[in-house]
Structure formats: structure tokens, C-alpha cells
Image (cartoon, rainbow, N blue to C red; front, side, top):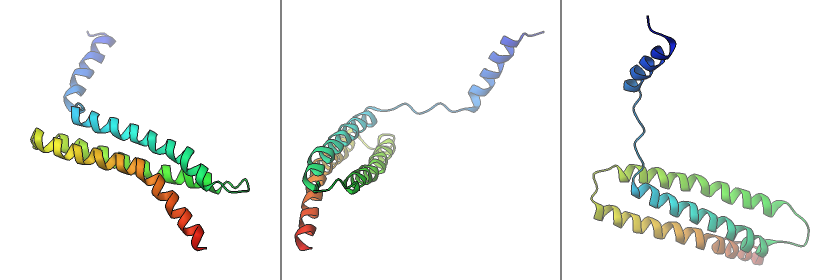
Length: 132
């Protein structure tokens, strides 16, 4: 007669064949994920310190803060989408040279957006304020 511990080990052995292990993260996943994370930090910092300083009005309106939350909330799904794209790319049959080309282009795009969008947003807000 088997005891409870042996039954648990047997169940674990049986279930281990049913559950597929998670695919390990590749070097490309980690690299792009690091760039996305750091770019998101830079983007949020620029939004807080540069954009908020530029659009702060006379009154204590909560509208700029809600706009900040909305802008960061819009960017987070885009960052997750980029990471999912790289999970697929890194597990594809692309060569290392092709992956490097994609990586360099995506890295440039991530940083251009993270550093450029806050300033473009300020120009848009200032331009609209000048029109109205």
C-alpha cells in the first residue's frame, strides 16, 4: 500500500507529461524587454517633468494629471505588443543577422518614440493653444 507522499509524487509525474513547460526566454526577448522597460521609464519621467511643467496652468486643474495617466496608459499596451512581437520573432526561423537587423530597427523606434513623443505632445498642445 502506498502512502500519501508516494501518491503525490505519482500524480506529479503523471501531470508533468500533460503540462508543457514554458518556452524559455531567449537573449533577444530579454534585450528588447530591457529596452522597452528603460524607455518606458524615460518616457514617464519626461511626461512628468517636461510635459507637466510645460502645460501646467494657473489653476490647480486635475486635467493635466488625467492626461498624463492616459498617455502612460496608452503606451503600456504598445510596449507589451512589442514584447509579444519579439517573443514570436526570436522563436522564428530567422537567422541571427536578420534578428539583429529587426532588433536595431525596433530599438531605434522604441527610443525615438520614448524621447520624441513628449516633446511632440508639447508642440501639439502649444500649437492648439495658439490657435484657440
